[in-house]
Image (tube, rainbow, N blue to C red; front, side):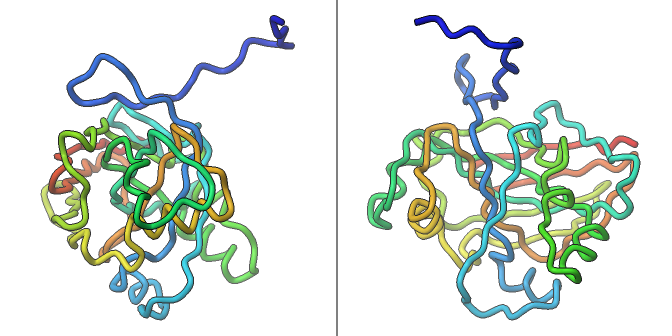
Length: 230
């Protein structure tokens, strides 16, 4: 049976794949909060291993052209560089021991955050959707297949602005490791091919301004530059 839609479906959001003419279709974007101890401290929270928490971004948050546009009513916008995990398969209640079998590849992403709006939401006990999930809030670079990079458990992750380093850490500093994140998410969601997981950011987050050039690097994935526009 041919389905007749009331209007044309929106085009699929996708990421480029290094070394391939194919593209990776994006489904959902899961994000883990405060997954590096030093970042938890700078945000005023306990750095110890406590139960993880998650939030989601819509696929419309993804931008792939190397630009980030500040919303007109943004206030203070902060950068957060993160390793992106792209799933090529999924399921429910995925064991930690086999979780990496679901990983298609890895990329560099920025979790751009409207910090003043987030701070007000925290104070009032309200959701972070506007602060974290606004259009264009997840600039993402091309994916490197895990078959090329191997599975990433350690390696430098950093971000500089206009040539000055702002964030620096190591993937082995994640409080919750990638297999654990996949296992925990799969208890609540049936994970699907096309899902992305943003795995948290190291310390050093801070504001960006129009005209800034953000240069991100993750060992094993590569480098990527994003220009901030007003």
